Amino acid sequence: MRAFFHPDQLRHAPALELHNGGFTAYAEVPARADMILTAIGGAEVPADRGEAPILRVHDADYCRFLREAPALWQAAGRAGEAIPYAFPIVGRRPLRLDRIDALLGRHGFDATTPITAETWDAAYASAQTALAATQTVLDGERVAFALCRPPGHHAGADYCGGYCHLNVAAIAAQAARDAGRARVAILDIDYHHGNGTQDIFYDRADVFYASVHADPASDYPFYWGHADERGEGDGAGTTLNLPLPQGTDLATFRAAQATALDAITAFAPDFLVVSFGADTWEGDPISRFRLTTPDYALLAADIAAHGWPTAIVMEGGYAVDALGANVASFRSGF
Ligand code: SP5
Ligand code: ZN
Image (cartoon, rainbow, N blue to C red; front, side):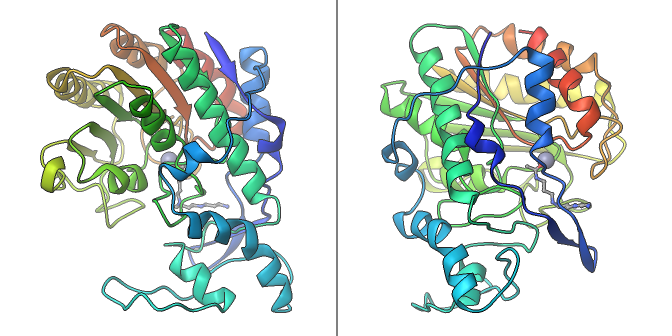
């Protein structure tokens, strides 16, 4: 299976995130990508397809914000990484504010996702990696792997969060649509609900979003991913959320994934994007499922059995030492 990765993706390397009342070491470290690269024997550098496919998903103002926030932060006399502390709760007026702290809260929904001077370039490269894998599959390969990091599925059209800045799965899905694939499905099997991906396609009939994840009643991102969120307008019925309890093992996870695959089968996609997170692994430091390394090959084989042209994009997974083996196992199932 062809794999893609750009070295610029290593450049985003914040030191700290705010968690449980204090600053702790940032969990989404560049070493995650190094471990995966070693385990899979390297990857091809993606071509640069420019900003246009990113702007098919993300607002231009938001992309400008990601580029300019570090300079605004510095101009405000701040040290370290730009991080928000005030958020405009739903229903606030869309004020045109320019103070850096107002912008950070406007374009982010948590304080775990710092923005550094390297963030835009790394996120841009991560998006190009997703686009390269997508183009490989559009050109006829059955499956391709995008070693995306920073990850993407918590990022919406105009906001970041959950270590995510540009929604690489959504950019891949939209690129497949724009290449003429009429119906695109996204299967999200990261431990966390992909609130950004859901949000981007919530009112669209042409992109189906199915997610298996930890119940947001107990786990981040809390406010999205509940079973009664099913899409709206033209997209009514094209979102499927399958929340599972902490402690979930292979049998329960596999059954939920089968439910998602049944729904995707009924949708009859021309193209599949898999948002793959290895934070469902039993030893993940920030998650509470109990999948084992060999389980990933079984889950992948269940997906592959459907034969859909498939682009895999990497999302989470924070047990750095086990990450390579878990990704290698998942790839082996295809
Ligand atoms: C892509 C993805 O998997 N994002 C997950 C975001 C989860 N954020 C909430 C939990 C943060 C826990 N941080 C622990 C840091 C320990 N130093
Ligand atoms: Zn996750």
